[in-house]
Image (cartoon, rainbow, N blue to C red; front, side, top):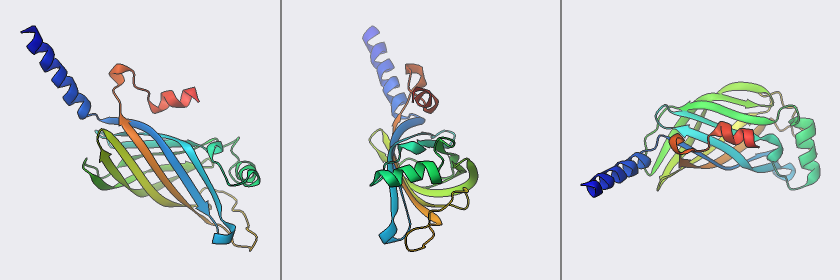
Length: 192
C-alpha cells in the first residue's frame, strides 16, 4: 500500500511539473541599424526573461552595456554617446501575451511597455513561441524607432540617418517551480 501511495505521489508530481505555468530563461538579442556599408550592429547574450502561461505575463530585460560590437570604438560610442548606458542601464519589456496556446509552433502577439533609453512606449510585438520538450523558445523580430526613445541617431559616413533599429531576439525558457527554489527574474537581477 505504501509503495502504491509513493507511486501515485510521484506520478502526480510529474504531471504537475509537465504542466508548469511559469518559465524563466535567457537568450540572445541583436540589433542592426544603418545602410549596408555603414551598418551598426551589436549582440548581447545577457537577456533574461519570464513567461507566465496562466496570466500571459511576459517580461524581459537586457543590460545595455552587455552589447558587443565588431570594434571597440563602435561599442564606446554606443554606450557613451547614443545610449548613455551609465544613466540608462537596462532595456526592458513588460507585457502580456494576447494569444497563446502550447503546441509545436505558435504565432504570438504581446502588448506591453518597451523601455529603452529611459523612455517607455506602449508596443504590440509579434513573435513565435515554440514548445520543444519541456522548454519554450520565444523568437521575435521588430523595429525600434530612435525618435520614440529619444536616442540621438548617429550620422553615418554617407549622411544616412539611422532612424530605425532592427531587433531580433531568441529566448530559451525552462519551467520553474517556486516551491523548490527556482530563480526568478527579480532574483537574477539582484545577483548581477
